[in-house]
Image 1 (cartoon, rainbow, N blue to C red):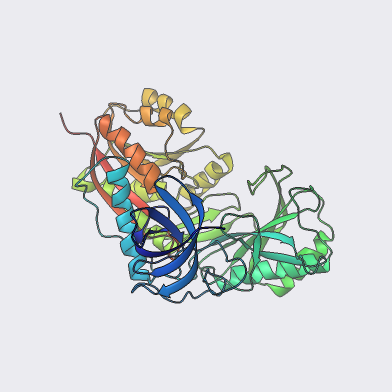
Image 2 (tube, rainbow, N blue to C red; image 1 turned 90 degrees about the horizontal axis):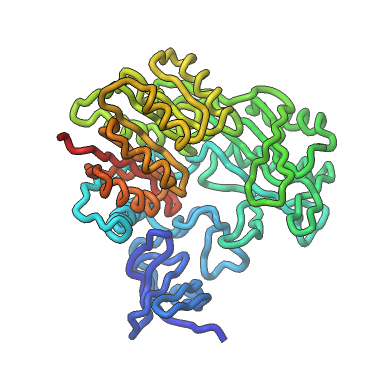
Length: 464
């Protein structure tokens, strides 16, 4: 018999769960779906010597920050069936989400980096709380009740069980309509969803990009190259969805959770979608990285440019590492004599060159390769003088070889853009022990209704 407890929630944890304690006990209990002030009955699902993880069974008393989630598929203790794992904070009012995200950043800095009294600026809110995502990847599965039908939606938390959806409030309506039409046609054509354990079926995901002009780019991800009735599929989609400007196929033949494979095929239309950020226009292919919240990304990039030019400094050369299609690179070009973007994805580098040309930016160039391989060569061949670097790594943060490269004496300022406060705090500790001083952190909310937070941090090397 699983242990049941009555707990009172005190705060939110950096991983997004609620932190609670049982009545009459000091043991910490992490509760998914909890909110500060909640009194709830929970069931322990995993227990350690000093903490436990539990699922919420019954809400006895709601905390002051709790609200009714907008999405009916969001977790609620009185709703049967699995909950969508796409958003974990819809039950918190937005002002509370922002407060807890700022607290999470400070907590990571003190607990992981062991740095106190850091200047953490007030968090910048997202201009949109709903319908903000410009990209969605939706997995497909077979309907257990109707084997000839497909389901499409997001995974339940901690599983590969798909929660079928007909709407999603954090996506634009166009993205949802595209996914539902793909599901309808795939069911009609008899396409089978890929099943990882058996290796049967082919349809894996629908990947949709949208832009501010109300256009969409679709990619269907399949396990096998053959797409039955592909011409009918394209024609029917175009007739039903005139907002589509391009339809692609990606083949992922591996037994893996990695969504995209190496083989791309254009079935019809445009190779890329144009998106506008600030005064710049960008061509973004289906495989290229672009921040999922376009309007909030503008605030993020403005914060990065402000940190780079803080104190009126202008550097001989600025490096934009992990530059993607060059969105941030072009933003930074006005603050330097020369800016170099480095990106491992060669298709993204091609797009970056095109984006620079298309926007009339002449002091930017781009290198394809791994950062740890390219940086030593740039140091060796670059101009003398003071340099700066901007890094925007994946959630895993910077590797040790990259961190070592960033301690080069030419580098006088480092602007770190991060989507993971925990790995950022780890890297910040290393950088501060290597001669940098952490000047300030600017949190930015790119992911409303979730526990994720982005930040921009400025490191300076003290002047000798």
